[in-house]
Image 1 (cartoon, one colour):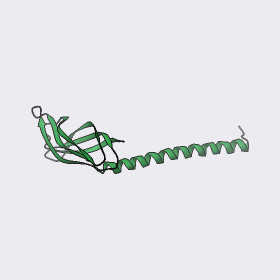
Image 2: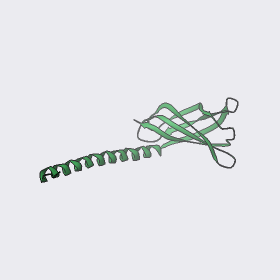
Image 3: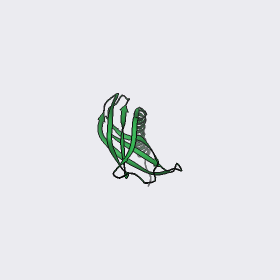
Image 4: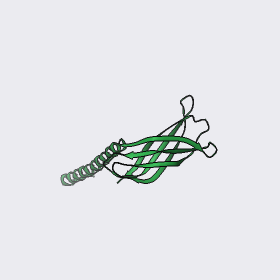
Amino acid sequence: MILTKQVENEAILFIKKIMFVVSTILLVGCDSDSKKEEVLSNVTLSEFRFYTGGFGAVLMVDGMISNNSQYRIKDIVLRCDHYTNSNTRIDYNIRTIYEYIGINQSINLTEFNMGYIHPQAITTACRVTDFVML
């Protein structure tokens, strides 16, 4: 099929417009990801204490989550990794804390149930892995 020069130019222009829209969408997504990473670096855990409940089978957590960013956040995802004597990560638990944390505010967790814990776990390390920015 032979295309006229005008049709060919219109097709090229159309493709350039699509490429511009796609690149704009990708750049906006990257900006929000970097903003979220910046906020995440300002969400901290402190005064965390781990213990077991439920006949030693359930991980319980007490502590404080602080939001030192310039954004309100909610639905904070907490991940706790469990390690053995040989420092092998043997298991992990992920739970969502359905609370709001305002700008430069904190929430306290008391007897927060993280779920079942592996019986060979000796140490635990927790961190915030995700949240919703408001």
